Image (cartoon, rainbow, N blue to C red; front, side, top):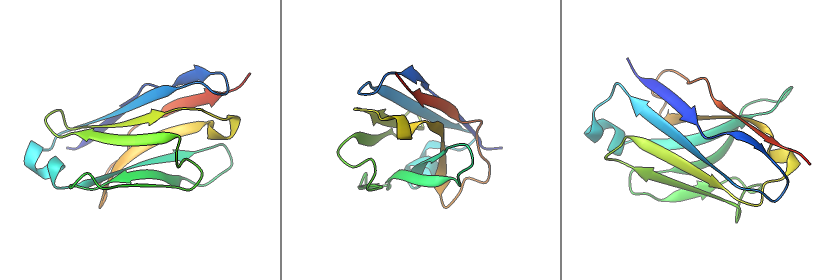
Length: 117
């Protein structure tokens, strides 16, 4: 059974940085390395939205609202995807999730990011 574990969230002031990690277990390395992986976020009262994606070729795409501030990367040996978040803004406050594209079939618990002064 596939499990996704997100971590690295926390509370920071505006302008701060965080690095999120998403570890995918229950699948073998070749399967993971051939999957695109996405980061999503969901703020209270809002729908889940796509933040960033990385393909199996490590091509990267970002939502306009994080371009230039967030960087997605992957480590196929560790079945892990990262999201480096710089210059955080209060509107980045949300629970952040990762999943495959297509989906790995389940969601993790997410990691809370709170940006406030």
